[in-house]
Image (cartoon, rainbow, N blue to C red; front, side, top):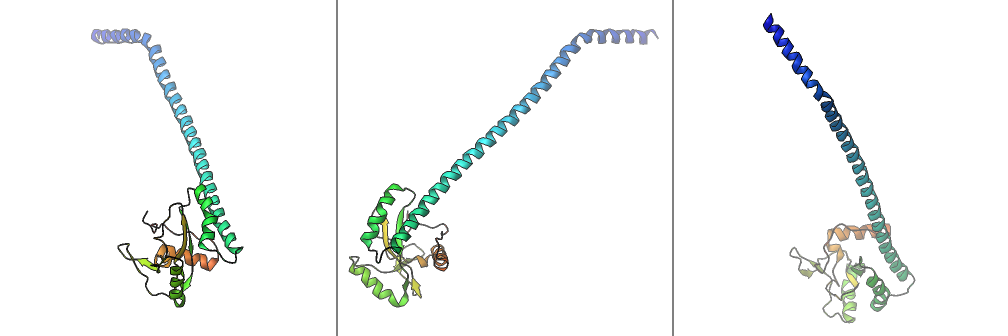
Length: 208
């Protein structure tokens, strides 16, 4: 009985000695809890700020992209109006019309005028272009190795007839756009709808 009494008295004294640390412990726990809450609030605010900045930047990029697209479409529509208002457009006429716009618009690499040539008119068409000074001109396509080869027999062709770019390049002249599936799909859509059509991803004829 004395042993139990002594043990109880010792435990009571120990607990009483630890009581003075309880306020400090409570203060520490409360401070840690408040710090965690504050960190969570700050983290949430920061996420909201970053999300808002992301959306603002995305909106700015979207607006800039749309402005660029509209500018390029306006350029194409101006060429369409130019052709519609002209009885005939020569190679020089096209050059004088589009070169100023090309020099101001880095988004446009080149402007190609493509003529629809029925198979029955192929020989006469090629002879006409040769008479303009392009003596080796012929309608061509590219083989599996991307090398130019004579075009295969088709009911009609869509050769590049005029080409204007900031850097002179005649390698594209005569290339039949209908020989490339992506370009052909866009051509057919444009012909059938009478509207501008965008092709899928393509590799430029000059290899760049």
